[in-house]
Length: 226
Length: 371
Image (cartoon, rainbow over all chains, first blue to last red; front, side, top):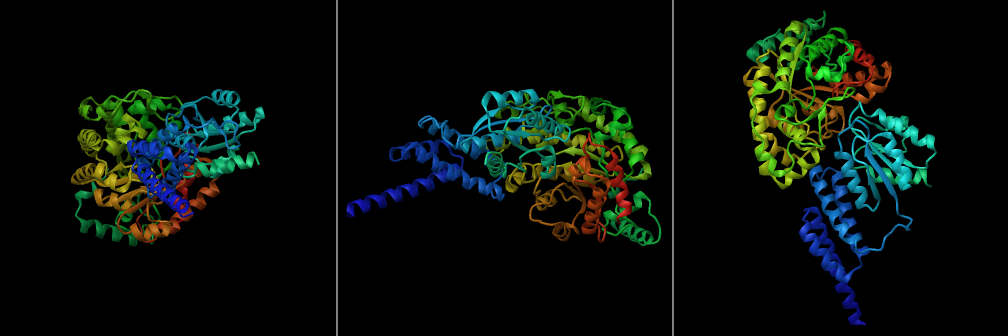
């Protein structure tokens, strides 16, 4: 009995220490240390459990980014680090395509717009949070969005525009998507937009910045797929 | 045209603005008097206005985006049409944010219906080793920068005593971003700061020449755009380390020419405190509230006696709302920021280039109606 208790205390201590070290490696975007820690962790834990620890570390950084305690460049490096580590985990995990949580997202920057920083950050965040991302890139025509939604049977369409001159293309894309009758949650974001314009364009969600993208996408999904 | 304000003694400007402020209580001031009064933090007869109709002005003369960006005579005609028709006291002629980068050799795209931008599929700097290879260019061979100088020369002459003209220069980090792409640049500011700073030094040398040439056209001010000094860019310590010293050099140069230093901010949570420390600007334009301020009242209290505030009408509202909403928004800003002078009514950023121009007229009228 005593032996079992000691064993579980030891396991808890290991878990806590590992969590702390992983959090620190994610915070410092130290990919090499993180890889070694994950290998060490995988001796004791399943890939799913280790992914959970990683996502907790990312969530902590995301909240820091939301409160401006972390800067955008630091957060980009954090996303890079976590995505590389999650890739390592996913190669060990069972495919999750039958899971209820599995959501496929088509994302892109609208026609005429070359600014893909925001889109890339959000695509990286989506990946890290377990969404499957079909990234169409920048300067994407309406037809390409429609085709991707059909081909990949995506639940979410995420559109970005960073210029007031390219922003109206979003309205056209959303109108086209609605005409085809596809059931899809549309989330839009970008510098010239605001919540009112997003509503007027017929979007289901408006991500004011990368800080809000995950919550806004989750709530748009729950509204469209209750 | 008015001589650079820095050439006048402070006491003279104070006395002049005091007299103007008094006269403004009983009669209408001229545009220049109104601005002098505002810049000295005294109350003019009404708030001055800068509608910031830049590439949107091309539509007044039926010109395309590429013509506006590449033909100085077209740019000048468009900007003067906007100034004459819409009004306002401050004119900031600029072409687009890629002027400097394109002269460094960045491949550009000139869309027919949108603002010119770099071809991000072919960035001039392709990896972190490219920063140190960036070569200094001669202003004489810099076609687009030279075009802007020409535009400034003509606009300054044509505006004359009817208003104040400001030159414009994108900060060195912004110029570098146009040649590398923001995402890579952000990563590399952390991973390869020495390399990035080498490129910033090269760029700053060229921008100094560019600014000198702008000052020689007779402009009263130069506006520096330090977009990355905000929550949309680098952390405050990193910005102070990377761009701070270079923009300090550029703003000192502007002051040494007798011109006013203006700073434009279109990011969220701009670092006003750092920007003021490094650039000592007289005017700060802003699209969003700076870091540490939750309301316009807080902003006025914290920075209102240090700088003239300019902005911050919502550009989405200008693009989509009706005249009544625009007037209401202008009223809200004037009530919060105009007390005691030191405020210029303007959009937070460039007037949306493809939006109907009606609201630009409303904005200029609102400055008269709401004070």
